[in-house]
Image (cartoon, rainbow, N blue to C red):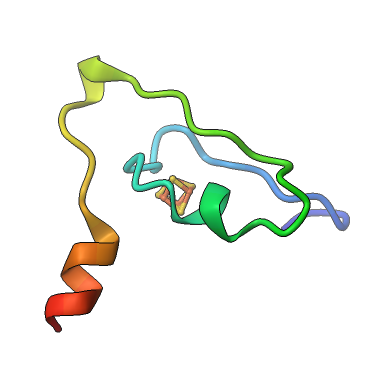
Length: 49
Ligand code: SF4
C-alpha cells in the first residue's frame, strides 16, 4: 500500500488471484498473462497445508 492506494508490482505478481477475490470493493480484477506461465493455485496449496 502506498499513500492509501494499493498497487500491484506486475513483475512480482504470480497471478494467483487472491487479492482480487479478497477485495471487498471489487477494485481489482485478474487478467491472465499466458506468457508468465501457469499461476500458482494458492488456495489449493493452503487447503493442503
Ligand atoms: S494476483 Fe496474487 S501474486 Fe498477484 S498481486 Fe494478487 S495476491 Fe499478489
